[in-house]
Image (tube, rainbow, N blue to C red; front, side, top):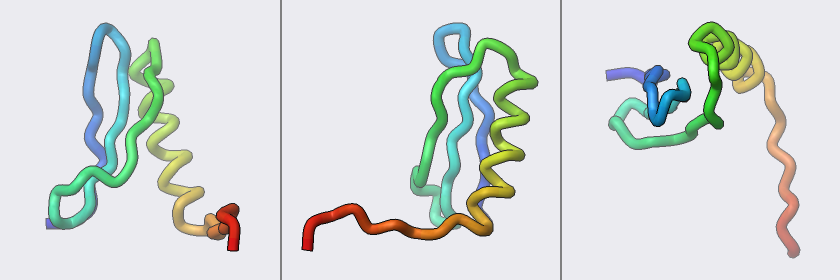
Length: 60
């Protein structure tokens, strides 16, 4: 099994969830009124996650 984006509908809104290869929930989105907007957000997340830097904002 590989990582997957799941498109779901909850309370009339579309959302995505990202699961890792073990099926564990890694991330989830806010609600979108339109399915196309949610699909666009999935594509944006896929592009950004590949190059995103980690910024540690915790206290030392």
